[in-house]
Image (tube, rainbow, N blue to C red; front, side, top):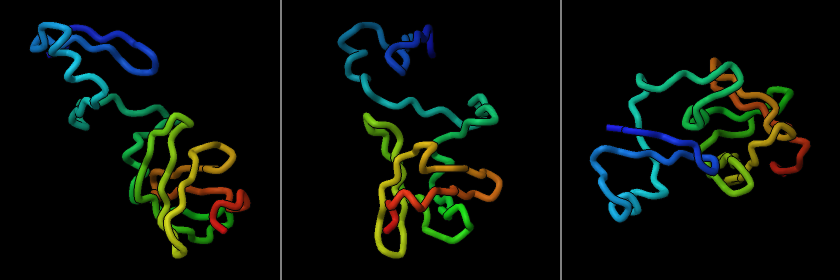
Amino acid sequence: MVQDATPHKGGLIVKFDAISDRTAAEQWGQRYLLVPMDELTPPDDNELFMHDLLGMAVREKNGAPIGEVTGLYELPQGLTLEVRTAKGDVLVPYRLTIVVEVDLDTRTVIVDAESGLFE
């Protein structure tokens, strides 16, 4: 059971009742905590869960199909989408200048193909 949680450097320091000392806690460092979906607070209107992006269709602003999101990478520079296209996989930085819109209802990511990433 979680006893305490404190924000720290973009993450959390979490104290569990089953982990009694620092040595035991260090074995659990840099890991993800998995939580059942029904226990999560829903994202705000301008937010989404990263895993929702997987499998989404990727289209140009004019609607032309580009490919599908097949992977996600959390890099020091930020989130990067792996998009499978007819020409091969392309890594797409998740930036407002490139990812113009994400529509959860239609499961579509709209990108600015003029960025040159898909040539």
